[in-house]
Image 1 (cartoon, rainbow, N blue to C red):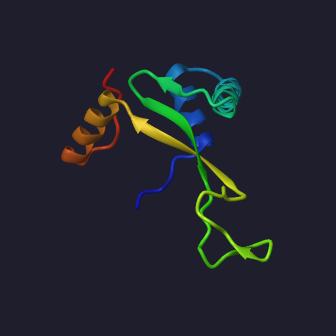
Image 2: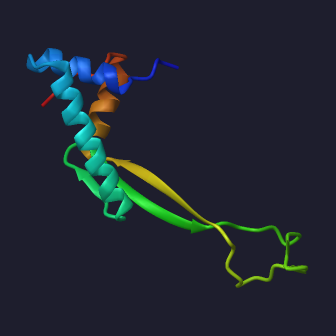
Length: 113
C-alpha cells in the first residue's frame, strides 16, 4: 500500500505549483474543507465536477433478536436506539477514467485537465 497524502503535503504541492505562500494555500484548503463539512452536516450532497460526489447516509442500528430491551426481546418493527451516519464518495466519470489510465500505465497521478 502506498503512503497516504496528507493535507500539509497537498498544501505544499499546490503552493509550489501556483507559486503561492504555503500558509495562504493552507487557509484556502481549511476554508474549503470547512464549507464541505458544513454542507454535509446540513445533509446537502457535495458535487465536485470532474472529481466526484459526497453524500450523507443514515441507517438504523440493528439489534440481534437476543438483545433485551427493557427486559423483553426487541421485536421486529421496533426501531433500534442508534442511528449511524456515514459519508459516501462516488467517483466522477472523468476521475474513473484517469485512475484507470494511471493504473494501466502504473504511473502516478498527472493533471490531465
